[in-house]
Image: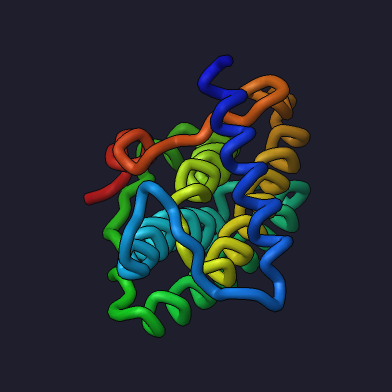
Length: 194
């Protein structure tokens, strides 16, 4: 069985478990994580990624990088990313301390114009969707899992909307999404962190 298919089946099983657990226990055992404190690490990992995306879109809008035709889409995605940040901050604060936002630098992207900016946004959204998928089977709390999966689907829809305006492929992984682990995610965003 391919790694992509295994990842899909693992995430699907986790999603089914979360849906079946509505009204049941708020935590579940996972082989990857023992204590629920692991959920704080996952929340903070997701929060750093959402801070990163929110900051990117804020700067795109403030610097007037995209044309009016694409500005509405970027504004809507930015609003979503702000709401993701607020939700993840609140969840992380309930378990401990929320992560701090990273300092970013996107000047090279913006300097290359709207096309490069939109292609970079597409990469960030696909990375975000894959990051959530990569952590789905590690989350202990069903409530956190449900929130993470709802954000995962929105990140994927953001990617599809940006793919539409750029002419890129909607399904870069094919029929099964490829999950990414934190080191892979960080390798993709580290060039933009100061």
